[in-house]
Length: 366
Image 1: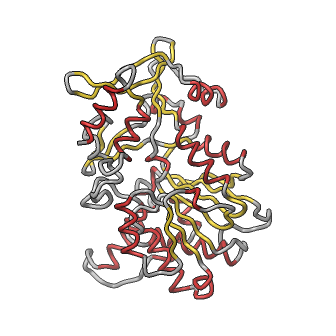
Image 2 (image 1 turned 180 degrees about the vertical axis):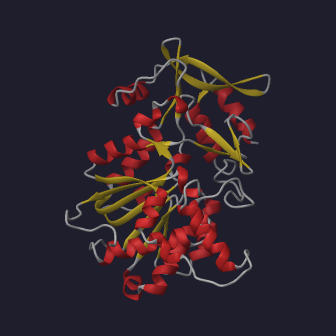
Image 3 (image 1 turned 180 degrees about the horizontal axis):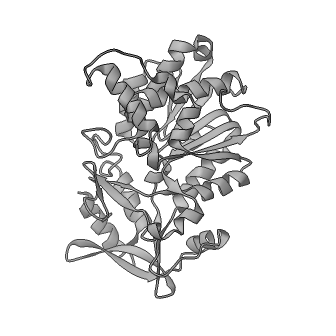
């Protein structure tokens, strides 16, 4: 059904092709048939990928412990906004931790889940609808003048991008067309003024044959979020590179790929509507956009470094059980997988930005 929808989009376009941005937007978000909005399990063993928040509850509890520190020690308002909250698993783990350990904060807490997918919003209601602290929103614009904690976990990597390439010394944009019933790439001279401005403002120079993703949608969504923050913390958890890293030869083929039944697909045109599409994000772009919106960058951490700072080791449980599949043993393995070299956290980073926070504020417990 989605493939038919894409072919109609292409055939009705003036040049019989669409940008990768439009292709991804349709493949992931087309009403009722896009990957993220259709009635299908996406995360976990029965889905196509895992997230840190779905590997046990230690990730969420570590975030919650840190959020409590920010509220109690740094004086940040007890309001948490999660952008791209998915099925609500991470929100549940955070809320349960605060409910169990901090009754005073719990009584004054507001937790906003921002999510566009009807499938995921239904799952959120079923999972945490019983908590009066939980509020549900479809767009970032539904909350304004924010004082508190705003965070996302693997949100920006799922936004559509334009794809460009340097081909024999000239910049081209890569489009998607259809031929003999098959989706194919086609390249045309780059003339999109927004892309040209993005490259110029960031002094991006590509090597010949280098492919590069332009995250215009990421910039748009980030600025909506950043402009709504009056004071507090903005936390971005995702995989991506700095501009210097993007220029390394290992990344010259770009990062657009798909995940289907836990297998990585280099061809982004396979399984449209039945495959997750993702790209590595541009952290320098988020830092620059944040600065324009009054946000100061504290640090760009490796995820395991950040989790150690938030006290994830406190989640390890002592046990004498010999069964390696016992609940405690499995939980401890999941935690170690988040912090050891080569583990689940290896590819993830955490960008911490603040606004109107006292210079003396200790953002991590000692």
